[in-house]
Length: 312
Length: 312
Image (cartoon, rainbow over all chains, first blue to last red; front, side):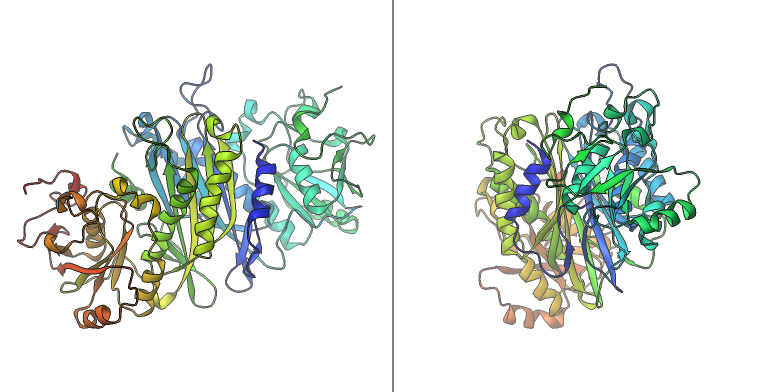
């Protein structure tokens, strides 16, 4: 099963959305009409033991500290709010936990320690949730609620040929470097970009620059020409073609109108957050990603990223 | 681990909520400030294979049809909106599924068939979600969003000694009778009770009349005297003391001021939904549930429901 194609099919089965659904499924967050000309942003993301973090019984790896599991679950969702240019406000948390974690309250207490610490840093309030018993797997789900002024919301769509493509941070080797547990969601950066109306389209890069870049391209109906020599690498030893599909970067990719790019780089107020221009939006018959020589990096326009040939 | 006591401890660790959190954790839904003097209601509930429905490998039971799994996940959440007197509007769905369900799209398509059919009946729009891979367990989580006029919201708190206690529907034997899969969430009934300002306090009974009654009692700081001979039974053969802790009823329990009870029973517009008076709210030093002879049905005031003696 391919998540993107399944969800695309599912979306086609949904009835026409009512007027108060401003952004439906298919972006980083949904948006509904909120109070005072704000949109309310909503997203749900999950974390699964052994998939998104290490468990005690994962071969050869130390178990991820429960605090970092809770932290990551919230951080993943904060990154979705960041990509819309929003401010995170509230969250609800579901946990389905196996008996090995629930025979005492210790694991879950530490899980919430980590989650609530990050929630405090980002001023997010935990307002609800559910605990359930599973048998084997440990699954967390979190729904994040945020807000953004309606005229500032950033979507995946909206990029135009000629726009310059920028990213925050660095890419690749997230798991080995521990970045996937310790990253700072780019909420301040995303909010600033929205407020300054810098980003014509934006996405959070969680499944790799290639796949998420393609998603932005599909939503905007453009191609992305990426100069692979300019992609900032988290680990300089990592080959760039691997780094752009490693995933778990939780950085922002956004398209900027050419006339705004100068002001963006000059006024970027986040000294600790690298900002890099990595390419250009281009007119293309089918949305795809090409490198600086014009060679396609996404062969079939959908999930090609894991099939493309690594030839350097 | 006891869910209620863990969550009570967790709530004590939360910082003071901001003014836009009108109802924080601990009720059937949280409520935040919405548009146009409405509150926005939010709740998250989960469904776990082998716990909330039968799997192919559950001994001696046919697997629950995927349509009914999806239906139940939404229906559980609709029941939480009903208990606040709200109107359901939107939902987000997370699924963490094992390889035996994801090797084709069939199970998940049928799951969404059932979920979307019920969503259509209740005019709920699916606006987002997430799919993830688990290894063994199948876990669904759903966040429901609804709205209610601020002056009509029903909480667990607010019942007073002397209030009459009413319930919708019948109790007990939900799993054997299939009720847990086919029930109609009481959204229309809950909405009507809120609009008519009939319910001074309300809760959805999902974990048994005894436990959820105790939760209402704790929130309202009252005792509940229940006449066990008046509790409507789904299966007349079922002993009432078992029926009130079987769980999975998804009915409403609510407290009505004595002067309104006549109008309630006379004007109840839902011919297909039984309405029964089962007892009275009483002044008690500690919230507990007593029977018509004044005998406690909840020994320790917390999770006593599964320890009380069955002596008839």
